[in-house]
Length: 148
Image (cartoon, rainbow, N blue to C red):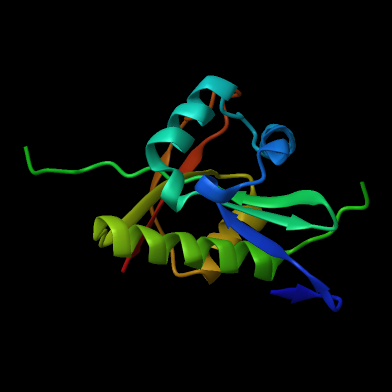
């Protein structure tokens, strides 16, 4: 993939350049309203590394998708890479479909984070439920769903 005629490298966790893991964690820590602790992140990466993606541009981690599968049974200068995020999301979904055979995705997003809500809605997610006081900060969340 290219941006401004420069190559953007995308790696699965198993092939991440290991010197970028801290860079990825720092990116997630600054961008998420309630970032995962490093131990949870490492656990998810170890368990589901084949569906975790990292994007490197100009020697920096500029994007990451960390996914987890659960089985449900009855009973600097800010650069916006919206298309990179969409690409990473769609690649992650394809991997989860191919490896685990998933048929739907559920996630939560802050009700006040309008850019994030727009991003997911542009990528086919719908709002299913509002969860009052979902985050520790007291902010509501929307549960979003995408049927594949």
